[in-house]
Length: 238
Picture 1 (cartoon, rainbow, N blue to C red):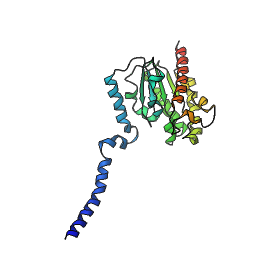
Picture 2: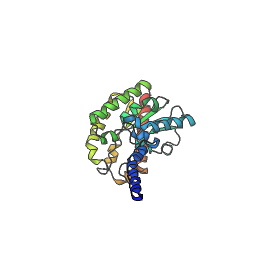
Picture 3: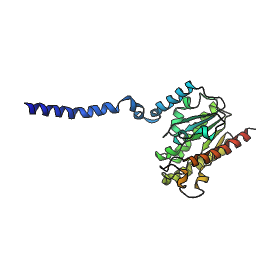
Picture 4: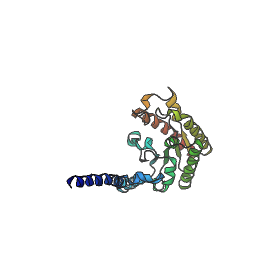
């Protein structure tokens, strides 16, 4: 009788394991990650709103939106004398910024908008044509809301970890650069050319150990490139 009871207990425990695992997967901590598409970023977008309620964003700030290259950027160090807003959420795509446009862009009154996206888009399997189409959609939304605000698109970076995707990334960059040439409010920030100046893929000094995200030196050079484009954008308005 004791052995039979122990057998039933073991069998009951084994049957309970899948149910327990399913409950863990459905827990609130992983709820956003389980959502499909752009909805999975809800907690990130909500965090921006909470931040802005605590500290009112300044008017005429530089608004940065995009993926992890934006999120990990120490904007206060790069622009110590300029108000900045960091709405970067790692892993995001242009489509994600389009979906959350009302919350990522509309609450602000920026002097310029700086975008970095397309890197994950290509890595996720989108074609250069699809990424370019998404850029056009986002640019149109921004122009409708901020018709006089300069928009700077930072070129998709050539990285060591995604070197095999560089041909598709370059094709996308070329297409977006051409679009920027047609619109005086769109500005293409070519960070790819200086990154490839020494070697292809760029040297390790540009990156953290993962070969994807920028090092402190990499950000310093990106800051200089953005500042040059901001200067040109200001001159174009005058």
